[in-house]
Image (cartoon, rainbow, N blue to C red; front, top):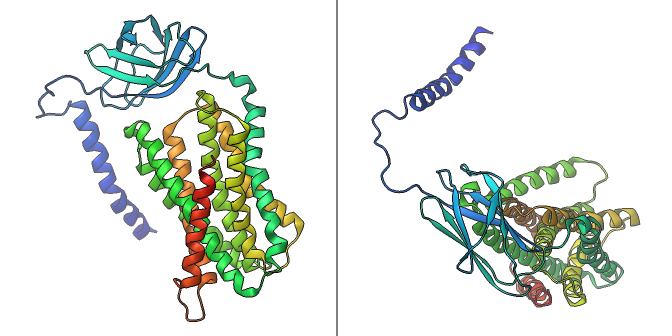
Length: 382
């Protein structure tokens, strides 16, 4: 007992020394350090724009080390009245800036935020559109998520009877096609995550959040896969289909988040063409889900469950995106999709190997490239 206690004391001793040193350094106000010269380091990031009748409301976040106070606001080089929810924005803090301005629908505007130290933060509104009323978001976003997530995946899963009738040699090619589909989704999510992260406050993690999300999802899904492998009654095909569904579901969560955010700021027109484009694009995801179970029997309940796991998160993502615009959260969720899909691809690779154990052979290369080109072509419709 005494030996174990001594071990804990020795382990905690460096942490205690660090804590005492940090507290002492803060209390003594950094002894030996000279005051910083030059103006304060101010960095404001506009995270959300809400256009109402005769007003422009901006949600801004302080991504710099020093507090920021706004002195003036100009819209298209004309000063405008404004109110702030917080008189001073501390580090990583956020505030609402409500600007009184008679904007015109369809016009472009340049908003300049002038700080008390003379700094200028410019924000562009390419096309002014009235922001939709949040009270109608829940039902509309649920419908939109169903249109672009649940229904297309379910339609794609209708390929299962055909898959069970094709020659056995085709299955390897179809699994390679599945890897190509998933690889495109991972690349698309990674690029979108980087773009979203760079648009937000770098102090919150920036593009690093995509990497954190990807690694976390990869490790968690690996643990889930090992747990499922040890359970009796979990066939290899269904296990792979479930992992594919989880990976696609996390991707659709990020996709729904982007759709909801775009609609919330009026940057997305909900037309039949857009919905049809997403439906065609996401239908291929259903094929990727049912390909692993094409050589074994499964129940309708399991198929419905797989479809909901893959398509349902699009509804949740649309709700989150419409309710709040937080680039850091979006980057993290998109990173989760990247990591999950990467882990799923790793699990699918054995089913693509030929008799000699090679992963890359003419059939697999053709299937992977075909899958990626298919996702690219259908993505042009969205």
